[in-house]
Structure formats: structure tokens, C-alpha cells
Length: 503
Image 1 (cartoon, rainbow, N blue to C red):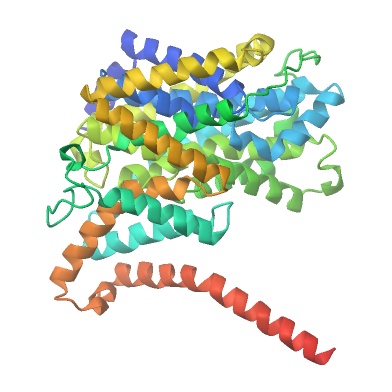
Image 2 (cartoon, rainbow, N blue to C red; image 1 turned 30 degrees about the vertical axis):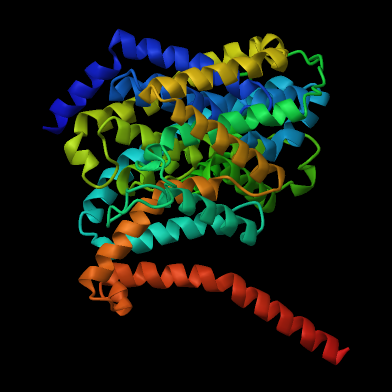
């Protein structure tokens, strides 16, 4: 049976149309990632309208490929211009640019691409091995376990947010408020519709995603359109020269980056950005030459580059098994999966086994073609990086409007997209993170549904949420996460008071 499903998945992925979609998505992802300011999340958001007209396998293949390519090519402008193409490249931009100034641009770019490929394959192997096993384990979950799991996911998104915890909470509650709109609740009672029939179905997920990640970027450019054009002066040779030597020199760094990236990627709300920063910091901490970091030392690029793409596959583990997005990209993908009648959760591997095998094969294929296409992207960097953004941004806006309208032929969806985009722009301008808001919308319904069902089963007794071993462990762990910042703050205040007393 497994062999039959695998063979069917192989036939689906090797279909000429699917291969063509993968190639086009790869080129698109490389382009978006190489343009400073355009993130991998934005690349996926822009592809959402197209997926409406596709079968599940090519739709998911397009998103997986574009994401992997965008994360990798984001290193190119960071290395050559000191302008990270994507947020995940920012961790080691200064390191790579310092290497460029020393005439080592080919080594820096080669390390970024090659070890992104290694990290991507590592994360994919973990995804293939861990996701089905976790799904079998999760089949024993009741509404109590799922409630604590959702709360834990939302908590992680807040506490690992680069902004303050308070701003993370505000962003989360904005998302939860948007999730409350409409009749999609256990009581099927219309909430916050203000008499508008279009709001009875709630805030549509896909237009909201496109608005948050694409429209907000267009607005940011419109309000600050002064873009400096910098000519690339660095000469780049064969970027693969010396990569085997780096592999033999830094095996533990590569393994650490792959492992940490996959683990951090699996945390809800973390993603490649935080994985890269954490991995770069760990690399410096355990390096034999920490003083060389910041001066153009390739070790940090090797480890953080591996963490980048391994985090992408890691983020799919909670997304597929529990329906909890590991990052903003998988939050968008979950919406597409629902649109394709592939509801994420433990049963997805039983209900859609061929499609799941296809996803795994696409991950492997996307990482393999990263090497040749990454090489071509480096060679074409001068052309790509000098695309005038005053031409690019209006095209993106038109594409978003037409694409979102085509999903349901609804002007209201376009209005939702524009309004949410404006909201996301003001949030980011005031340092409010978007990721908790996205998770709030995606998980809000699941949170309410499992809470209400659990309270009905428990007859109002909240202690029943701790009645099952797994639920009890998840609940205690979640409460500890909440209590830790309070405890640290209290301890610090107590320590400072004692210090002043003794002085």
C-alpha cells in the first residue's frame, strides 16, 4: 500500500505540468528573494490567487519551491549590497558583506546556497520521519489536548516575538478579534457583522493573508519611496569552489545549524528568521574563533545558512499534524490546504496519503534544483537587483487585486485585503509584530471550538483540562511559559533591591 501511494505520488510530481510549475515557481522565488524588502512570505502570498485554479499537488509544489528559493536568494543582495533580500538573511548580512569587501563574495554566496541545500534536505528528512509518527500519536488527542496545544502555539508566537511581549499580546488579540467575526463559532451566532451579509462567513483568510504581507509592503514603499541604486562592483567566480573543504572543516556547525533550524522551525510562530538569528548566535558561542565573527568569517554563514532552509521543513511538521502553522508561510499554506479540501490534522496522512508523499518529494526536488538555479541567480544578480521598484510595486498591487477578486469574484474580498493591508502597515510602523495576529486568525476558531467542547464535556469544571496525562503535561508546560517572564522580572527586582540595600 505504501509503495503504491509512493509510486502514485512520484507520477504526480513528475507530470510535465507539475515540473513546469515547480520551475516557474523557482524562478519567481529567486526573483522575489533577491529584491530587497520582498520576503519569502510575500512570494507565497502573491501565489495564493493562482492556486485557486490548480489541483492540490501543483498548488503546494509551487509554494514549497518558491519559499525555498526566496529564502536562499535573499542572501545575494545581503552579500553584494549589504541589504538583506529577506528577513532571514539579516542575521549574517554584515558577515557576508565583510567577506565581499575582502574579495570573498564567491565563498560567501557559495556557502549560503550549498548549506541552505544541506539544511533543506535535513529538515525534509526530519519532516518525512517525524510528521507521520506524530500524526499516529496525535490520533489519541481529545479536545483537551488540542486546546492546550493551540494555547501553547499562541504563547510561543508571543514570547519569541522580536517585539515586546506586550505588543505581541496586542497583535495576538487583534488576530483573535478578527477570528471572532461571522458565524463560524460553535453556536453559529453572527458576531461583529454590523448587519453586513458579507461578514457572516467571517474575515476570509486568503485575502487577509495577501493584504497583510503584500499590500502592507506596497504601502511601505509608497510612503518611503527613496530607493538608493547601488551598483554591484564585486566580481563573483565559481561559487562552489572550496565548499567541500568547508564541509570537512565545520561538520559540527552544519549539524548544529540543521538541528536547531528544524527544531526552531517547528515552534509555532518562529520560522526561518528567528532560526537564523539563533543559529548565528550559537555558532559564535561555540566557535573556536569567536573574535573573527563580524570581520568576514564564513563559519557563521555556514551554520545560519543551514538553519534557514531546515526551518522551512520544520515549520510544516505542526502545520500538517496539528493544523498549527510553524510560521507565517505555513499559515498561508494551511489556508490553501483547506481550500483544496485537505484539512490539516492527524487524519491528513490517512485521507490524502498520495498528496502527502507528493509534498515530501517536492521538498526534495526543490532543494536539489536550488544548486543549479542558485548559481544562475548569482550570475544574474546585477540585473535582478537593479529592477526599479517604482515599476515593481504597482504591478504587485494590480496582481493582488485581480488575484483576490478571482478567488470568489467578490469586491468585498478586495476591500478586506486593502483594509487588512492598511492595518498591517500601521502595526509594523509601530513595531507590532504581524506573526501573532496571523496565528490568532488561523487558530482562533480552533481555540474557541476546543474550549467550548471541552467545557461541555467537563460540565464547567476547568480542572478536567488537566485530567488526561498529555493534557496535564501540555497545560503545566504552557503555564510555566506564562509564569517564567513574571518570575524573572520579580527575581530581578528582588535582586536589585537587595543589592541597593547592601550598598
